[in-house]
Length: 200
Image: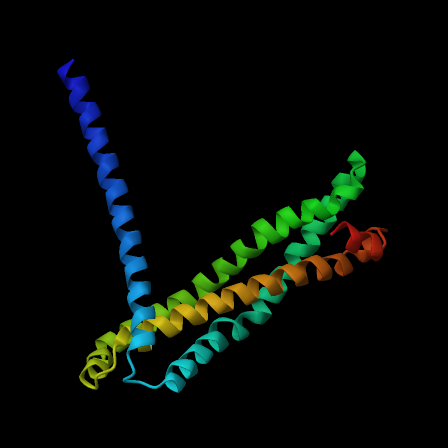
């Protein structure tokens, strides 16, 4: 009986350590984002124009340069989902439900997930290696010696630029996959575009 309680106690301790470690990590990330936003608003060592230029460079790299890859993924995802849903819903007699199905599949599920994966794989690794190189070359210490808070110059513009890029790319992905997917599969199905738009 004692060994059973010790096994249960060990499992509870392991679960507690796992939960505590993840909660602590999440709180540290949120604290870093808060401190970066506060430093960008309160610190005036670097000008507002400098922060805006770093934000625009991050949006260009994360958002604009990812458009070709996101476009191909949106057209492929949209055409596959539109074709499969039209074929299967036509067999079941639920063609009028095509809009609801596509909104759930593309807008709520596939679009944000695929865009987030592209941004993480493409831009997240690049930003991490850039900050690692800055740390190795002592550029962060140089910023601190000039009186510039690294959180306001390095972290805040990259976080804000990444958030703006992800939101815009997700919106672009959804529109292109819903409209472009229909036109790519137009020669394989006979649904009129007006009915498709009304269904959406």
